[in-house]
Length: 266
Length: 293
Image (cartoon, rainbow over all chains, first blue to last red; front, side, top):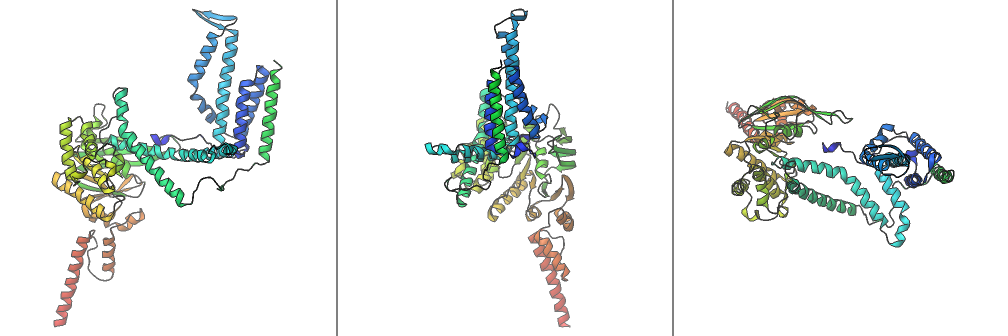
């Protein structure tokens, strides 16, 4: 049951996008997200759509996977559509009972929906083409300058990698503990909220103890292999920019420029 | 008491890319008072099988009957079944959570709806059975040693007074003395309380010494089901499926090869000792006879 949850949505494939440096992808995603909120009008919409679908094609990830992420925001989308449709002032198109749909409302609803959908799709591409560890490596390297203002960049990145690594382990542990307590007659399902919360204690206490025990063992193991923090530590897979990254940065810049320019065509 | 498994199948992650059939067409009858051992290679389905016995896992197909009642019936209370079939998982000390040992052992009976007084009585008896000194009863379970924690966890299941006790590798991670203590405890419970005991183990020596009936699992099916002597006679086939016979059995076969009439189906140290002594005394008396002639 619990073992069916897969963390991160990484979809392995041999594509141009997969091979890009994670920093490039992070930067490109940020630019893309900005562009989503800057673009105006149909021309802008066309530009953004073109950019998104070009990347989707290049990534070689099946559309089905991308669409999965949209399921999570169906509710938000519905709320957005409803709010924009019925509450925007302007020229009435249709009205029944006390509700009015305006032209502005229709346009706003459409654009907001598109923005949200494109937002999810774009971020999905990031997580579908980059492994969680690549992402933390990318973040660590990009945020390195923050070391100068005493931000512990390496430690934060290490914490993130370890956390990601332990999610499946702790899920399995939770499963085991839950079964052991169920075997002693524990009941996690019935009762009101308070009762259910209390029922969590036999699950959470052993889980925390287990997590601390693992953390302790891991720390000892890391020290035994000479881990001493980030100073002077080299990487097995150092991040190095390649030609494709330069091209990607260039294309992202051009894309952004185009989107900004198209605003003035409205 | 009887447990019947009828054509039980279990598939993990059905209809996904990770689909695995863990149990294939299992037909078993567990009788009252038996002491059964289950052995099998890693991934053979042993743990999956025992989790079906107390309804923690629901079979993909097939039926399970406890005392003749279908446990998958809509009206059947699985929570009650779990009180009657006590399952002790591997490394059971990981389930301890209460502030004192005593309180943790009371958890089981409390969940079964017993009053505080009755639960405490059961906990008292259970802790006595596992031989944990009263000095430790009111301490935090996390202050105890590994072996003591394990005994606390086993007491936690015994406190529910189950009819059947199922243990998944109860000796995992213990030193030889600890292992003997736990297994002797289990044997004692079987003897004194007429509890049906099912022991999943990786140690051929352990099962050979204690169990009356041995079930061998192989890739989700039952390969052998008989007395230890019967099962270990197939030691070549057992080797092929990643298991072995007890060391003693191999020794006996080697002795036979060298002309000593040792008993090839001896599976415990005691049986081997008797057999070897017998064989040598016969040989010695033969020699004595020829010498005097």
